[in-house]
Image (cartoon, rainbow, N blue to C red; front, side, top):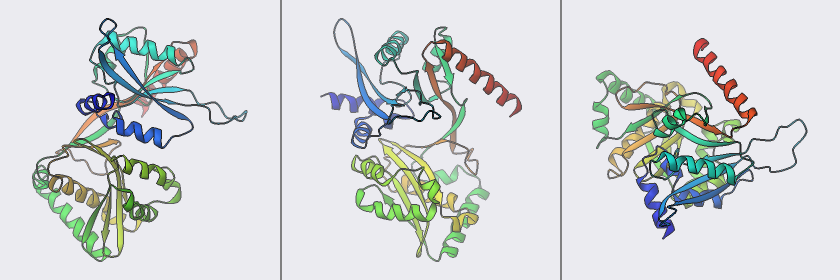
Length: 341
């Protein structure tokens, strides 16, 4: 019963990152553990009736994994509230009670983290009004891009100007001609297709970049729990690029668009992304309604199709003298960056 209620709450969550709030992602975290982090799930209940009000999936990070060298500082322990905001009713008293409880439950934790919290979110507005809260947007407010998917790819193209549509078709023709065959897209969601994805990543990523992405064990676990949604694009005998992503409900997250270096001069990244968008619009039966691209600025500005929201990793710091100093230092640093760029 708990799992069903949990799934229902996550499916109804308005969060941009609701994919991280459901039981499938918790299964991934617990089945593919990292030594420095641990998953927890808490419930919020009414004091009188004991009725469940909501659930709070959190990730405890910064745990010690081995004795540290003298010159290596210990990572600060943090508690990440998964999915940008907890699965709770919008109630400021309940939110304050949650903050107090978690900081008391984890005395070594120095900050609660609202990851990718929108600047317009009610939680940020409340933290700004609360004089007791040491709230800190860690890297300032950064642009996150998302796209509402229309009923068809043709409708998406119609949102663009005629010159833009012509250039997209021309770029795909040039890429296909140079690579020696028609562009073909392969969806990769199951463990049995991960070899093809690994081969594509080996072509598209230098070793240093590859180590920053999901490893084989993580991709297998994501696939087993139905979260993985990746693509490989080929033309003739050549891999032209791969895209790494996750999916849950009506939302698809595309994190890494990785064109093969041999075709970057032909705008391969744009071409492979358009193939994926066409697939999501026309071949998925309307399942996906939004694509999340995360932080960053795309190579081309899609003002007609992308929605930009400002988000930040917001830290709610434990009220200590050291954390008050840290907050003021970050505020001064961000002010200087805004002034002098």
